[in-house]
Structure formats: C-alpha cells, structure tokens
Image (tube, rainbow, N blue to C red; front, side, top):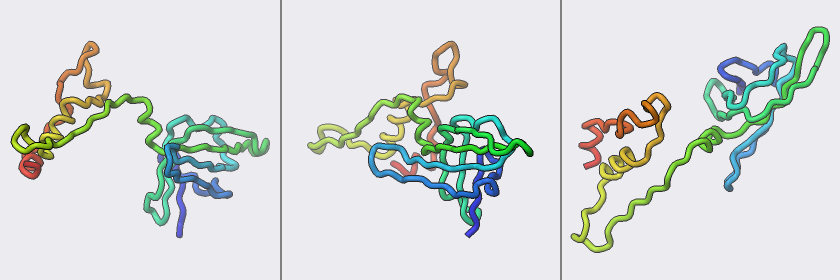
Length: 159
C-alpha cells in the first residue's frame, strides 16, 4: 500500500514521517484527527479550511479540512519547521449555513389530499430551501427564486 498526503493539492507525503491518526465518531461530534508535518521550509501556518486529502494507492480514502496548525522551529540550518495539524471533517464548513428543516408526510386518508410524488418533493425543496451562492444575489435579493432547473428526463423518472 502506498500512502499519499496532499494539502491543498500539494504532496506532503515525505514530510509525514510519524504517520497520522483520526477518529470516526458515531455521535454528534465531528470526525477529527492529527498529523505532524516535519522539516518543511514553510514557516507560515496552513490556513483553516485548507484541504487535507489522504490517498492509498491513488484512491482517496479520507478528506478533511485543517482546523488548526501549530508551527515550531525544527532546525536553524537549514531553516525548517514542524507543523502539528488538527483536522476536522468537511461538514464543519456547513456550520456557517442555516438550513430550515423540512418534513414531508403522506396523507393518512386516501382521497382527502393528493399524495406527494418524488417530483413534488424535489420541486418543493428547490423552491423553498435556498442555499445560495453570493453571485446569485443582486441588491440583497435573489436574482431567481429557482435554485436549479429539473431536467425533463428526471421529471419523467420521478412522475
């Protein structure tokens, strides 16, 4: 097995001599881990939310964001630094967004109300659950109320 460590697309595998560890948690806590990058010429800490990807045999097995970096001097000649990284699962970035909950309940009595189809659910979510990019706003208002168009083949499949 060949391991590869990338930080923001740059290979740091040869600087990760002591390995790494991470926890996959089943409760409400986010998955997290630690990694030590040694003897690099980079003095500046890696920024929060930089990508850290772990590959085995060129297959991505885990992807994190850097949440903290503690830098210490490793050598004066040549000038080298060690980085103690703390990483966290990628869903951490979603904490910046507020998303309302949405529940769909099929009617208990037949014939009283129409039953929801999968297409109904997709349309309702599209029109009522806006997660939008800043480029989709003009003067503080969304340019379009629709987040996306539903392709005809998807409509045919869901009806």
